[in-house]
Length: 254
Image (tube, rainbow, N blue to C red; front, side, top):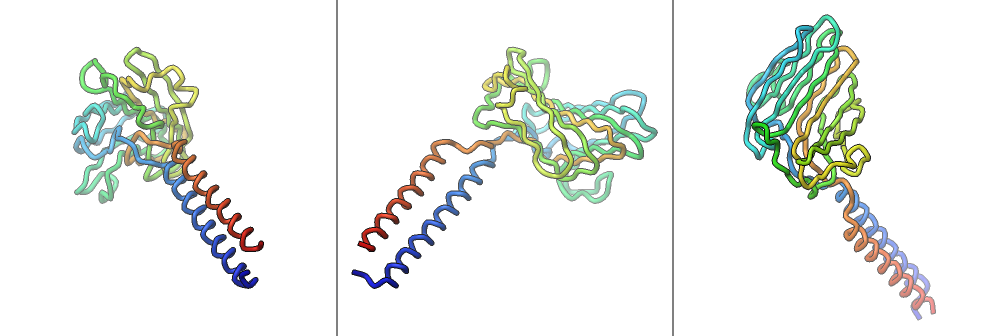
């Protein structure tokens, strides 16, 4: 029979191994929850654009770029003035070079509300012409993510999706701080949409807080749910090691 101090050392070593394994499992599970998916807009193509809007009506512009950066190779950008005495402005900045708000520090799309102005920015991805995106399969991912690099003020972000059969749905979330705003496909607002045949995506940012500023660096499709088989394997492995450790410690005590 092993001396008591040896048994304690053995049990302590098994406990440390279990702790390390559980930490590893937790890290893997958390990383699975944010697996990077595919692009909608990396905001890294389309050139330099700056336009403003006042009470005269909405300003609209179309930018084209590589399909690897902009889904469907085209983005339609509209900015609408709601109220106030100033103006709204938006820009897509492509480095290198200075931008309208100072030195360009990255690739972003800006919505800049000056003085007491409020309004809305809408970005539509439906490809060139009237045919739409043609039925792109989004089901390798399970959510749309809009990444904000900077937020001053607050707003409401709405993502609208339509399929080739003209079924559509939308979901709205608040934007109050930098970070990713995520729109899961399982949300009830998208219940009628066939995500195997997506024909258009639109992203609308609306604010009623004067002088709010927003900076969007990318819009992507992401995997946000942990794949069930992976979780099952991790939990079974942890359980097996726990049971093995208990058996060994029991045998040593006897």
